[in-house]
Each structure stands twice: as C-alpha cells, then as structure tokens.
Amino acid sequence: MEWFKEQGYEIPEPTAPGKTYSQYLKELAEKDPQAFICHFYNIYFAHSAGGRMIGRKVKTLCTKTIWKISFEFFLKAHHILQVAERILDNKELEFYKWDGELSQLLQNVREKLNKVAEEWTREEKNHCLEETEKSFKYSGEILRLILS
Image 1 (cartoon, rainbow, N blue to C red):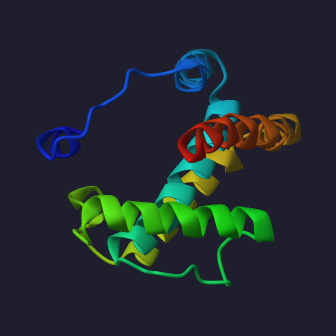
Image 2: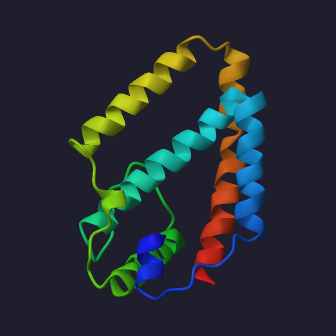
C-alpha cells in the first residue's frame, strides 16, 4: 500500500465489506478453527493463483485453473488484471514473489492443512466445507467493490 501511496494514489479507508469480513475472520480464528481454515484455504490459494498471473504480468487468464470458474468471473478477473497492469505500469510487486517454486509451496500448505484435518471428526470436516459458501460470499462482496 505504501508503494501505491508513493506513486500518488490515495489509499481509501476500509469500507463495510472489508471491515465485516475482517471482524468475522477474527471471530472464527478465536472460536471456530474449522471454519477459519476454510476461509484461509480459499483466500490463500485464490490469491496465490491470482498473484502468479499478476506477478508474471500475464495478459490473459489460463482456462485451466485449480477451480472451475464461470465465464463471467473469468471476464471480471481478466479486467482486473488489465487494470492492475495499467496502474502498475507493468511493474512486478514484491507481494507476488516467492522464495521457491510456487506450486511446491502450495503443495506444502495443502499437505499441512490436510494433516490438521486428519484429526477432525466427520462433523468438523463437514462444518469446514459448509463454510465455503460464506467464504465466497464475503470475498465476492469485496471483489464487487473493487470492480465498482
């Protein structure tokens, strides 16, 4: 954010969707580890995949992704990448650089999360999965805000 400020961009104050989601994640982290891990998983892997594309300054999205995505989301994501490239003037952000091969880093995190979940009961695993809808709802609200 500091880099954007140095480039002359005004950093807006957080709005309701971000504040609400942030507070919700704090509550989950304290009281509901299975639900929190669902959000962590979705955010971590989505941002890593998106970051890989932005970090390499890709002009089009790959159609083969970890998750199947709708055509509408594809168009919105492509638009975000184009806007990001214009704002960044094709510079690469340090945020999207990793120490090591990203695919291996993602695999390591996946394995650690699976190891944690091995100790869960079937009910806890189902609870984690049921949280997916909320994860997409909150992140979708933030994405809509960015696109507006």
